[in-house]
Length: 79
Image (tube, rainbow, N blue to C red; front, side):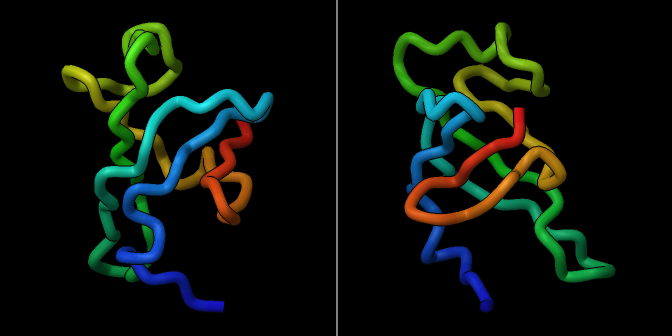
């Protein structure tokens, strides 16, 4: 099943416990493979991006695609 960027931008991103980390604000695509390489997530108010195990810039974190367990109503991380 194909998933298009416009279908997932704005989706909630949750950790393996179901806690909401934030909302997907952008995707990075590997131009050689066409695969999603990173997710840019705007963190929720009250979530400290520096406390998360991902690279961060201001109020966003950069999550590698390998950290995604599944995409459903939310984007579920395996961490």
